[in-house]
Length: 258
Ligand code: CO8
Image 1 (cartoon, rainbow, N blue to C red):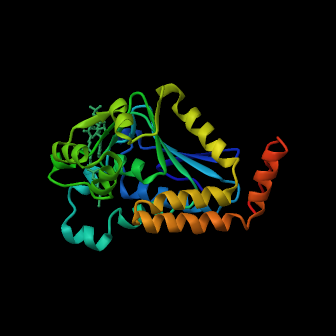
Image 2: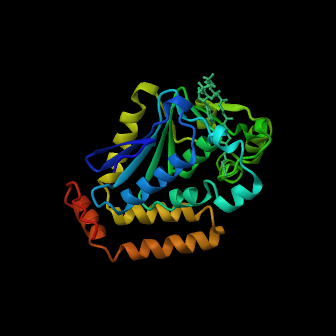
Image 3: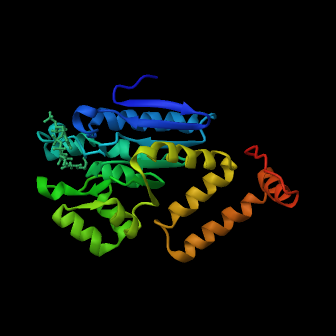
């Protein structure tokens, strides 16, 4: 399906989704968010897709929610339309691994979207920020919660109260991004990381993603119990037998997602 605000390519088993509103630095309007939620739920159901990369342009991953679209909205509009809310929930419900490849600005809703992905690879020119305070609002699709969990209260509070931007190096030091890649190589590197994930057993990839995500929602004791049950369950799969046999036989495993 052709989308108005996204460009989609599939390379082997990796779906590359490019946010594509260059005239607005990829600002997230309701059409873009809804198309992205739709594309991700289709990718989740497509057996050819085993990992997903979301990226923007070299200048902007996304410079925030679309301020022009939001400016006339009232409290009643937001509550009734659930502007962004349902689509944000659909995006975070994606079961396949999703990598955010961030170059340039990831601000406001753009930073929040990157944090909804499973991890963030940053270009050396990436800039992260939650500048909503300058508009008389606060982050609205998870920024106060996710940024705090990523970088801790002090840095999250400073960024959200002042609206200052964080450069890639600081983002890496603070644990917001997994690592930094030269801007020109960002997409290639993100696709190559996604390719590596695509080679694993989809069953253990899904189990690993869910267990790590549970660490945000559960106490340590409950999380460790969840992990243990999932770990034990994987011993009922053919892929566990294959993975361990391949190790013993000094060959590459041939996973079949069974
Ligand atoms: N919304 C709409 N249009 C935008 C946005 C945006 N967020 N960001 C940039 N644009 C547009 C500009 O208006 C401009 O368009 P035009 O040429 O027609 O005037 C074009 O993109 C290029 O932008 P600039 O000329 O400003 O480019 P610069 O390189 O000079 O500056 C910046 C780049 C610093 C990124 C600057 O554009 C900027 O500050 N943008 C706004 C950043 C911002 O405040 N983001 C937060 C938005 S609020 C938000 O995200 C709330 C999330 C919660 C959603 C929950 C909803 C329920």
